[in-house]
Image (cartoon, rainbow over all chains, first blue to last red; front, side):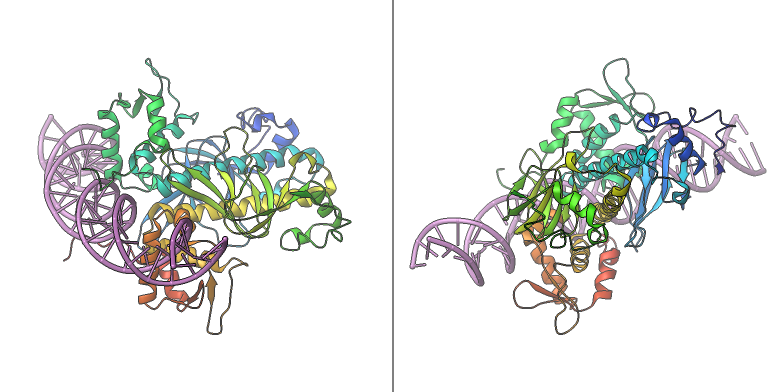
Length: 240
Length: 240
DNA sequence: CGACTTCTTGAGGAACGTCAACCGCAGTGG
DNA sequence: CCACTGCGGTTGACGTTCCTCAAGAAGTCG
């Protein structure tokens, strides 16, 4: 909740050290930080800003129906650009922290994107927007046609690609669930009970294993990929 | 399937006459057209290009699971920018025409976005990307928690905002379904049979009416909005 | 007319949501 | 230290819902 003082913070090298921001010129990083305020959020806190960069933690865009059903329509983790601005329609959803989060909110008016030497910022933002669109398309596919088991497998593999939850255990790959299971349920469009049952089913089939804490071992990533890509369709009512 | 000859086509005023492209400078429009090829697509035709602008018709990004389930993860109509490029991951989904479509594919290498006087192009593309993200968030919310009836109501209202399907009948608002019902089913994540049954239910309740052809009258847009925003949750198993 | 596709209608079953109860844990206060 | 409370998560029972399948209607094209 404080503006970023580049001098006090030791210069532009202490923040924005991840891709793609670390590829920006020093001046561009300072340009961003001059428009930025750092927020320390605890789980459940809302943010009114519509533009920012996640430094650590996880934030989500939460939407609710009139009768209280709750959905996270998008998740963002560290180094992700969050851009909820949209001109032609009312803003949809509020930005909420799902874990303790450090968020750099940006004042769009203070960003200097028009100068030619600031073109690297615009390119980085476009790149982030495109990547976000690609993730959203995959997520829509999951929601539109996959079974809960398949969605869970997709989500686990997605989390495995997140830097914050990548945890290589002693034996093979592991994933540390970056968010609450109830939040995961709201993200993949099922109920927490179904998450629990699907987890247990994947465990019984030997695809995952529960280690200490919230660590999940991916015992058979290939098989998990098969499941995630449609290997467990709804059982036919035919063929007894 | 031919490059656009701005001289032969009568100059840059004959194409890209809709928002936001008509706000670009004449030179910027020519810059786009120099990188463009116009494709005439019939329903079902695929396109390998990952960047383009829809001139008329509807295109969708189709993804399929290994067992054949098919999903349209995104739809684009006239004046929409289609940008499926993503650096870090394999392309997800192929661009397909859902109706007879005129598509302007763009060669990204020929686009001059870096020049300061071409900044309007970059801004227009960013604006389009952000609007697309906003639509995707709404769509994810529909897919994640809404019932088929609510999804259909949302889709009808979304189509009503499309220029190509806005059809004001004699009595109040109307929508002309821009795509096949089976494609609509693949878009909102239900089966065609469910579309049919939900349509009939909305009709029985007096919210919509079927006119001649594929024209659908929106008899009570407010009530339709209520339904679309969660007015018809799943019936509780309690309270006989 | 026949062949094809899209859409519709109907019957039946699997599956996921709903509800309730319980467990484990953390925080709180006596 | 223990009881109490609240929260997240798990397990079980049950019912609605929507998918599956099949067959027919309606429209299109040869």
